Image 1 (cartoon, helix red, strand yellow):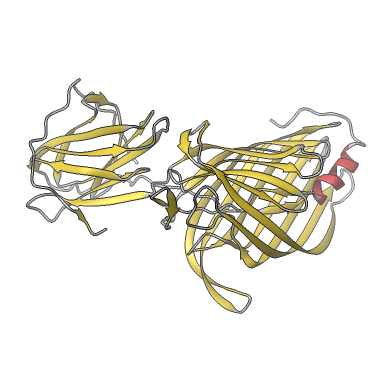
Image 2: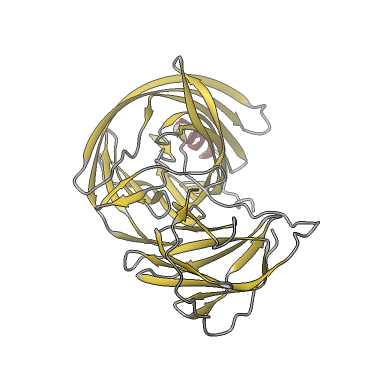
Length: 416
């Protein structure tokens, strides 16, 4: 059985007439998931973080492909049968930039339990690139894809006092998977409540439900089961994220400076005066989200205050040599007015700028053969049980009511 971390599309999206289409992800985007998988008697639980490291061009099957390099890192506990221990995982995958389809990657997983250490390094190549999400998304859409995955496995088993033993194997597997978008629910996980598309996929071995949310440009939850027994084998749910599908810029009246609004729903009704900018965010009822507003450092932002529907909020404020970024969360959407107030005088850029805040996150994919677990369990049963191994910010104190923004002529978004 395959231990899968699911190569799921990471795509920032724009809803149009109930559909989801378009892409926009960034280097630095990351997602952290609560993770569990069951294989035979062994249960692995922990967290998995997926991050876009960079953009480059690689050769795949004789063609140049523009890709993102995606890192996967995780750790947790391994339990079951006579086994008590820990696991770690790390690796990278290349995902096609146009649609985040998986091209190839390498993953290393290590399990330590009962004095035994087992490590598998899996290098996989997909032909064609594996598309887990195709756009546009809408309830009722179906599609099918056949992918051949070639995998080279290197397994190292260490059973003291004996020296490590290493074996290598190669496999080729062709799988046809069918997909159907069956619902558009609000899904609640640790990271919040999100507007999602429920996608059912099935092949000869498994059935999966993935809940892809345009608010986070990735699945917020996925559950895989054995197609024969119905037993749940893998479960992932979003714990943390920082991606912003919507990135809009506005000109400050009478200047060449820009205000940037990053959010998970489209901003509208942007207004400004000498000391306040405001805008409206409208999302699906029952969902949550987050917002980041970036102001030019030349504004006198020593007295920054933020209001949500005329109520003061306590944001996180970070700065670079050029900008301030104000970030805060929304517990629930409907329609909200955000106002940011600041002083109007111009100040000089400090000569010793503070470090910038890293923004954003994503989802990549990796797969590792369960051969490591099967081999490991056979050896582990021979041992007794053991105990598992064990930018600058400021918090403003805003007043209780928001300043009013005098109506100004309509401001069109600037070209990003």
